[in-house]
Image (cartoon, rainbow, N blue to C red; front, side, top):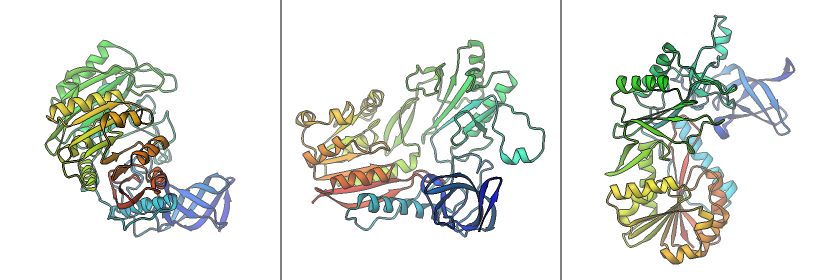
Length: 470
């Protein structure tokens, strides 16, 4: 049944059918159109008020619950619903894994349209909370007020905030009291920075006016117990900057690397900025199977250290190395996979477009006394050509771990041209992975598939595929 409410349709007693893309659940309107609804769980029966209508679907929110799903659990975080970070925190973990596995299988079947083996079971994460090693928070001089706060009728000042962006709102920041994603002292660091800044009159950033002093906070931790803190200031104010940095240095002596950036650009990305080390060293160390990796402020490293080890172990297992193979590691990043598999290979060649990442890879290989890895900078579609193969040799195995967009079609064409015996394809987006697998189907057969959950409480999932020549 549907009724109008302030010119917006309300669908009553709608059953939520499935978990859809980007962590939003799916139901059907009486006319058969899809309804996308956040913060509900498959099995819930709800009234939905729509706020957006398109030709093929509605977007809406649950305004009343008639039945609660058996898949539902109580979210542990007080910010759930307002914060867009952990969209599945109201769903039991075993069901989260089921939907992630289902998404990978659906994408490979429907988009790939290729012959597939029996999937190996998705590898869940031992830790479902406090698993991230990197968090980024934003300062704002006017915090976002939640629906509950507004409805409370209390006098609410729009005081300063240090937290996360509200989904789809670049200038709205939700103040975060306790986040369940990163281990201590992450929460203490963030809360004490906010309190100290308020007490000492340090101005929080205004993203609309581009005014203020404090812009962003990044905290990185490692499995070795090291901590990096980076404060991004909008402008230089030596007295106030040193006041805050000295407070952090004294209050949290366990900080290994205390750094800052002065960034007066319109965007807050630090990748084109000068990062200055104020105290300690300019990197922290991560360790995996005895290998040490230096992580600097701009380094890419898998954000779930424990599951990164599991992901790389599956990748190495799929590669089936005997010690005699020449391995190409495409999109190598800081060379972690390359170094992780190197002891089982004759030689590993890593290729990556980001010069800083390759510099990191070379430093790490030297630190780990690895002599059979070589790393090269270049845009994959340009550098991975006949001349490169001629110079470095015909690979027996290719490992590829591209960004969300998948591999460039020229890279796929080159893999087909040089035809290594095996390809291990690691992906954070099974839809683009399926597209690439379809392109490789003329020469390769998918023989193993295993999804890996790197990000509990979210819809994201990694997937590892082994291809062998037909």
